[in-house]
Length: 484
Image (cartoon, rainbow, N blue to C red; front, side, top):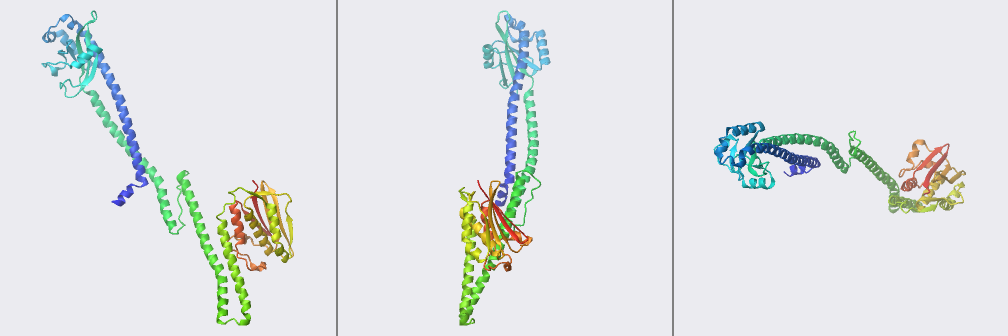
């Protein structure tokens, strides 16, 4: 029962019930409005039609009612000419007539079913006829008829004296208007049923097309929660919001899959990178403690333990730096700084390392300031990492290049060195975490493989990219910064 109730609370059934309710409510309102307007119109038309015929009959009755020619009912009924005239008029007009005196007593009726009965019309109708000149209603006339009929009464007025000498009532022969509207109601309900069924089918198809992708997304989300990012959404070839949602969902799945892959690679890499220094530290420490390493060589191995400890510390610190960088929005403050001054500070800080490698520097840095948008410390770190990387891999006695130019509203920074050519297939990997190029080309063996990854991370935070080329031993790193 609970499962069934939950099923009917789903989006599909809610949409179906809302659609069916709206269609049904619309049909009821339209039907009621149409019925009311058309019924009132038809009733008015019927009343006017009967009233017109009753007026004609009142004119024909004047000669028989004026001057008290008929003193009682029998006198009027015994007149064959008038009886024949009234009957003929009733047959032609399809209306029963009742000729009455001024008090509403029926003197003659063309309805054979009422022959022999003493009939008095309702006093309210007689009074209304005398006061307003006409009266119309639907009435059973005190039970004379089984159902209510249209009854219209008009006065019989002497055209010369303008004296009311009697009353003439017209009564519809049948309740044809009621029968017509009963048929209309049946037709309305049949039409409403057909329209409702068509609406159900159309709504079912439309709702299913909307709900099916959502159900697939629910299933896919559960799969993602279980760590399976291979499932993809079907966009059903649609260009509407559902198609856009499916495309966005697939893009999210791609991003999650890539993030998961990077997470696993990161864990694998960091496990590998941490394992080497920790194994070295543990092995040499145990060797000293158990006497495997002779006392005269303890200092040598203690130095190795110290170097590996510092390298481990640097690696952890770099990883913390990366985590902090990814949480910073450098463009939020909208501040500017002089990129030229930052480049000069990096050159000064790198002077000893450059000199130790016997390198020259070609610095193409303008004297005039070039203001760029971003975080000064972070960009300084980018320049430092690039220049340090170029220094490590530069050929001894060669020249480093560090320069900046302005192109299309951006400052373009270039760092270039002369050394071994980096293979084309390795260029895209330079900015990956823990990736290190062939150490045989570098005299620095203690890198942790995070310097260029930090460069890429900082520039991505600044909504910029870095490019690298390596041909004929010349390796060039280039990145841009917005000036406005």
